[in-house]
Length: 113
Image (cartoon, rainbow, N blue to C red):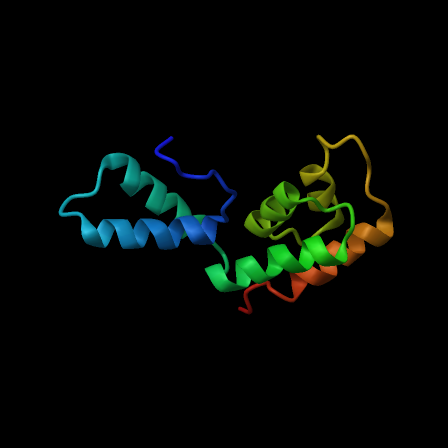
C-alpha cells in the first residue's frame, strides 16, 4: 500500500481532500466528480469542527470508540433513534444517559440555520 497508513476520515475531510486534488488535476475522474458531489451534499460541518467533535465524543462518552465517533460526526444525529441506529451493530446498547450525552455534544456542532 505504498507505505501509507490507513486511517478513518470524516466526510468533511474527504471533501477538503477532493477539492485540493481536483484543483491540481486538469480533468478530474468521474469517480472524483461523484465523490465530490457526495461530499458536498453530506458534509454538514467543516473539517476542523468535525475533528474537534470526534475528539470530544471519544473523550466524554466512554463507550464511543473511534469508528463510532466518525459515524456520529458524519450523520450528526439529532434524535435518540438516530443514535440507536448508529450503535445497532454493536454488542452493547447505550443507556439513555449516554444517548443524551451524545446528542448534547453533537447539538453544539450542528449548523445554525
